[in-house]
Length: 381
Image (cartoon, rainbow, N blue to C red):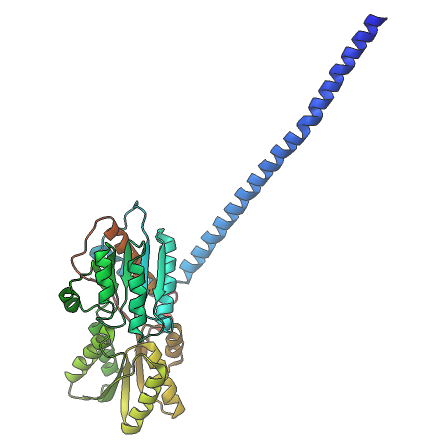
């Protein structure tokens, strides 16, 4: 009897042990299953996100017109010829950029494009600016501070040809490479001060003015009086655009250049200057404004006086200028791809950091957007 009880007790203990083992395994199995389900859900979410991004990219690509695709192809071919190929692999790099002012829509767009290009290329970039479009001192203060930080390359767009020279020299001394983008640094003054640039990427500003003058004259076959609203005196982009326009106009005796008025990139000054021009020259046929801010102010001044038929051109092809061209209140605006521009500048920064050198200035292809082609430029940025 005792033996039977002992066997029965042993069997009970074995059954209890198995039951406990089964019970203790259940939570482990449940946790494993839950983890697997979470992984699957995360993978599904990632796949859905990737699919959505691909769909968005495809939709964006479809929204780009054939004209823009060709312009991009031309731009890429030009950059390939002048810069070369973006390195597939490169070391750690930190890039800074000093732009002119976020009070101007063009530079707001450039800041956005810099940041988008940095994300695309895997290049960290920090975009800084002075306070206003004409505040040369605050822009220099920004660069002087950045020169002492841990940037490998800084891209500068100066307000005028000389205001950033002390900051560029400080970058040189600290081993920070400097790229001049857009508005030009006075290289002779920089060299005299003991500094140098590592690379330059820009546009031919004189070509911008020349292109506008040629288009304006084509639209005014009988000649007439024309004027220029220039930007800040001494600013390279303003000086170049003005010279390109005035030299081209001067070569044709059918046209009379009645005024070149500096308006400092300011809408109020441009508005007042336009009103004064049309009062003094009621037969005025065309105005070339050295940026879109001033061009839109000129349009507003003409509308206030109920004057039609004066051709107005700007530079930068901002969103507001695009709308004005579509409406027909502006005739045209000189443009180039800001997205491609900033991407090319970052590629140059990477290549400089990898030991490459650029002996010649890099120039962007230009496009005149006008009432004739504005509706074919879907997706241009």
